[in-house]
Length: 104
Length: 165
Image (cartoon, rainbow over all chains, first blue to last red; front, side):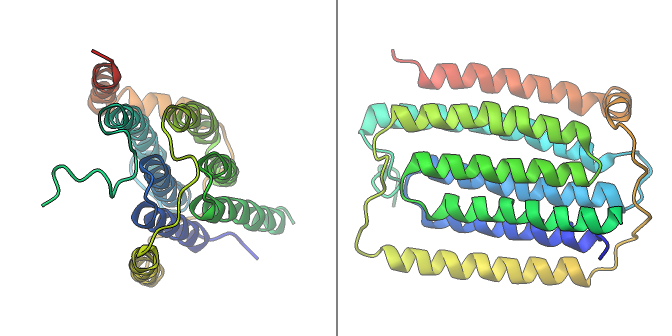
């Protein structure tokens, strides 16, 4: 019973897949954003596993990558939620299948 | 002994993370979804600690479980539809989404497990903050500065988009 790289890789893949399901199946735009955050988390778990178990020239390279992912996730959440609030003000809905102005 | 302990801890916190994620996608009340997502983030932070990433675990707590969840809760409060309604044709979308994500899990899981990674012995237990700070401000100083510009642009953009005019 030793922790291996595969533990981290599988946990990351499972979290990513659950987030993918949520992003595809939910209709509320806020719920879709939350699912995307979950996918970011899955990727971060994978990177942390690599950082811990795989040798690299730069020390802690995986953790540096994870920091940048968290930065971009924060920026994405702020802009995404601002867009959702703006869409709600304009269209009075945040259900993604009712936001169809630019749908072909 | 410590290895057995950390393996058990990994399974426990991994279960918390996955359970929170499943609760998040399956609960129809958005506030419940957000609370389940916090549970998932906490589990992931503990997993980070088990991978000897103390700095990342604290960042995860502060940014995800703190800042991003507060933003999400504000967005939930500011918009309607806090309980998702059932609709005709919903099962088809769910089925398609389930198929896609299971297929992704199969492909990604197989690829990740079949690849032979150059695994080394795990890193020694030591604080990571100093190393991260050194690397960020030497080899990765350009991406670091780009990240601050990105955050500034996102902040200005968010204010501009959400503002009532």
